[in-house]
Image 1 (cartoon, rainbow, N blue to C red):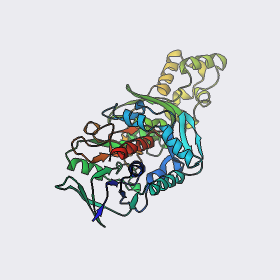
Image 2 (image 1 turned 180 degrees about the vertical axis):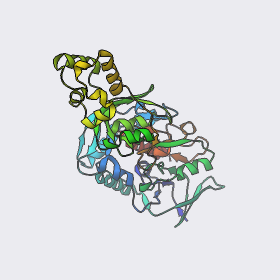
Image 3 (image 1 turned 120 degrees about the vertical axis):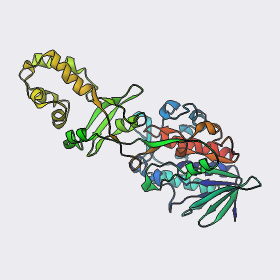
Image 4 (image 1 turned 90 degrees about the vertical axis):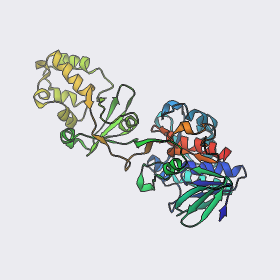
Amino acid sequence: MNDADVMVIGAGASGLMAAIAAGKRGRRVRMIDHASRPGQKILMSGGGRCNFTNRTVSAEHYVSSNPHFCKSALSRYTPGDFLALVEQHRIAYEERAHGQLFCVHSARDILDMLLCESRQAGVLLDLDTHVERLERTDTGHFQIVCNRAIYRCSSVIVATGGLSVPAAGASALGYRIAEQFGIPVRPRSAGLVPFTLQPGDKERFATLAGIAVEAEIGNARQRFRENLLFTHRGVSGPAVLQMSLYWEPGETLWINLLPRIELFAWLREKQRVHPRRTLKALLSERLPQRLVAAMLPSEMADRRLQTLSHAQFREVAAMLQQWPLKPGGTEGYRTAEVTLGGVDCDALSSKTMQARAVPGLFFTGEVVDISGRLGGYNLQWAWSSGWCAGQFA
């Protein structure tokens, strides 16, 4: 029997932060993980450079059935708090577009910082440890039966992550624990994930794999303007990944492939100045030629501007700036960066992350029904929610 005050299940971003926060309060903390190494998703984040937070973080950057839930944690442990820790450890970082903060050298710097902090806080870490069952004892304590040991504690922090990136060890353990104790779990789906195309569109755009353009993609509820990338299976890129958080299966999206210009007026002006140019040649100044060929019928694309009417220019503008795309689906958890849905926020305290109906049981990070946009928001949620749980566990 291994006794502790706090057991943290999951040695990822939120689990490490929760363990550190609890340990600094003088609590005896043990952290367990089924993987052989901690923090695998941290190492993978930001292309190996770890987009560890963002200069500007607010509730509008998150998706949840309870859009106000994240406000408390984000205000109590802020991007500035985490940045102060990064600077304390003298980790070189840089700011990129949209306030994103990355390591200059490697995501390993962030993981090493967290492991150093956890050791200093007296946290014990057991890896290759699989949870077989979690029980509540007659005394109100918890007992965690694992493949290698049995642990007993007064508080459990579930920081098991979601279903995204199974190669990094994703599992449904956290959801099973919640359901075992009668805590509602919202339906889950892949988020920050590429779209796949319907068979007809997949054939139509098969030659475009690798082409990236700035585009605006949206629906009635949300829109994003960033790069869009054509792939062998569909469309990806930052604009698409962001939009996947707000897309419902079967829904049609609208894409503007030329968001910087008013295309109808531009075409009329070019017709006046260069009447003998072909439409395809003109549009290829703004878009890759293969994309123009895929989007416009050849009988129109090959015509000279002087032969086209203003009504036809409006048709062209609609094809390129109001392109309706109905995805076939998404690539799923294999390539998703987050899991939408999860442990119902209404069942948790926004201040402590503790289950309202189960004293001593806490949930943090991706396992909770909070999903952030690209840009460091999901890691900031991990830091903030983990820190809050660690203050009370």
